[in-house]
Amino acid sequence: MANAYVSWASSEAARRAKIATRSRDTRPEVRVRSVLHRMGYRFRVCVQAVPTLRRSADIVFPRLRLAVFIDGCFWHGCPEHYNPPRTNAGYWVDKIKRNVARDRDTNEQFRAAGWQVLRLWEHIEPSEAARAIAVVVDRQRSLNRSRTVR
Ligand SMILES: [Zn+2]
Image (cartoon, rainbow, N blue to C red; front, side, top):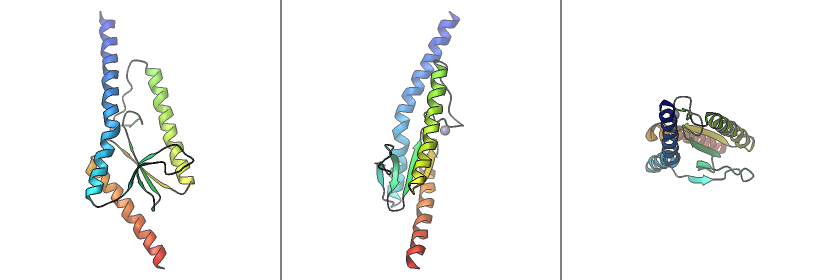
């Protein structure tokens, strides 16, 4: 009885976590984009910034060579919110570890290709995330201006 309940509860928790992350995977980035857009920033969406890398960034400023990723707390192993499902725990630990390693590799490859990478957790308030992106964009723009003016 007890075991049956535990396995039901953990598979239920895993199922709910998966459903929640699936929707959360896209929604935070959409909200961040709409705030940024309202702030007057223009950017590209889901671009394979580095053509040889089949990994697309969520928000891309091509001229600034700035790629922004909004990372889902579950899939990217957020230290504050990642909670491995009890069912198939080994599978999930490996899966998330691989994702985190892949993120690190993506950062390195982007940087090697001359791109700046900005990663934000999906749990950051969209307006706050948009402000953080705006700060980097403004700084990069003024750097570019001072380079060209002189
Ligand atoms: Zn988080």
